Image (cartoon, rainbow, N blue to C red; front, side, top):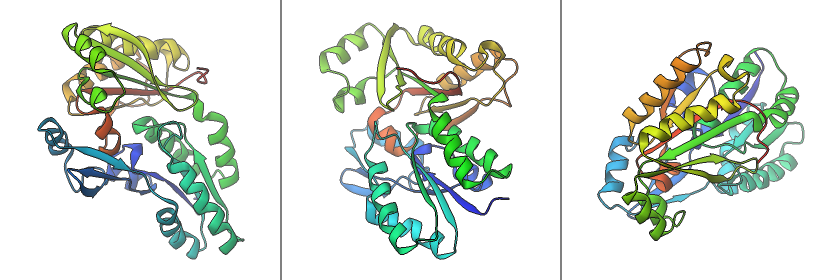
Length: 295
């Protein structure tokens, strides 16, 4: 097995057990609930159901990315052990954390000139970021060198597709991502916006679909349209959800019925507290490998 550290941020939205099983190291973002700071530690400090209920009950949320000093402190023990590092960051289209990690890398490169430190802008988020990490772990475990893995990830990261819908626009309005008027009208008409992550790693609204039932079908239609080999897709598929597990299960069942060659069952994760602070409850996201994102 290759002796280098494969690492990411907690915003990859996999479970603690998943990270440990795949030997993927991670560092945690922070978030605030009513001005009290907590680590985004995969639901360990505050369980996800409690977190989302606190949001519904009116708790004020904000997030804090990892700064360069924190990245230095996180990377240093690995370097002291004589290990090289490949670290993937939450999309630069969503967060400035990647810039902080780059600053830390440049500082540490001077202190540890014999070590390799690769920092990659994943252009991914939530369990799409997680599915990218899972593939990286597969390649590392197959014996791929750190240099080859870095090149593979840079060449293939835009093949990771992210599609989201939300049945509750409350927190999109609160965060300024949707206007109050659009939020009000959307609520009256039962509009569920369908969004994706663009080739620039930004969250972009793509369609407005009336009713949750129709948007559940539409999101799986997008997978049929963009997935590798269409309905013959034979790789893994992940879903993440924020306090709407039944909606996520409906999407998973539809995916599994329409794509009979999936690699295993659809894995459903929770949207973590960093991304969830902005979406609130009611968001379902679908992730799969496909054609390179062009828009």
